[in-house]
Length: 288
Image 1 (cartoon, rainbow, N blue to C red):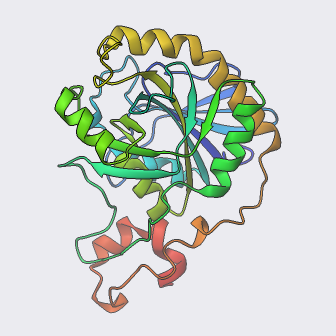
Image 2 (cartoon, helix red, strand yellow):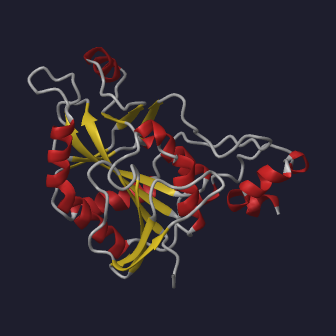
Image 3 (tube, one colour):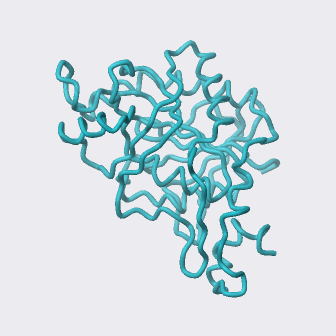
């Protein structure tokens, strides 16, 4: 690679490749946390190096609960990625977020269980700040890129991540609505928190595919309905990414690049050598 891919796209359900990339390289990486979901594709888009990763693996064989989120984020970090845009299928928990539309969420509720949520532990403790989990700077740029496609866009909204792989019951869906949630999906957590620990900016292009199961006048969510909407929205997602690559600023001015600066609490002398070696990519600049 001539230049590192500072922008990465993680494709979710329905987006397993990224047409438009030129001078493609395929990297089969190994990390201290295992292998990523799929080989990472590197290529140029609008004269910028882009990395692409299929979150669920090639052929969609990895369940949301089985994704190795730590390996995915670590692998992208090791390549020099600074910003991540997630393409996510989601259900709407609001009447005004209509299937076929796009949302750039600004808040998140983690309702998953049993997933590895942090790189840290085993002798090195970090308390990362995530009051505003989505990078506002990147989210603004992504919003501008989507608007340029003339797609129907909503800015803001709280995104709840459920464990899956099943869809919600009606009771659950109505509880989430009562909590003030706007969108529902299965993969943004813990991906977004790991990106923050890795000091990477993270934003989501959320494609509304259905009304979950709460909407009495609409059919309950199904795989068939999700894929149908995603196929219609594929061109919009690709055009938005092309726009983003074309005008993305090289210099980040948000707080994401310094997220660990005041998060590490362990006495450096007490960190086990193996743990320090495994996390050197993330913490070296603070512990050297």
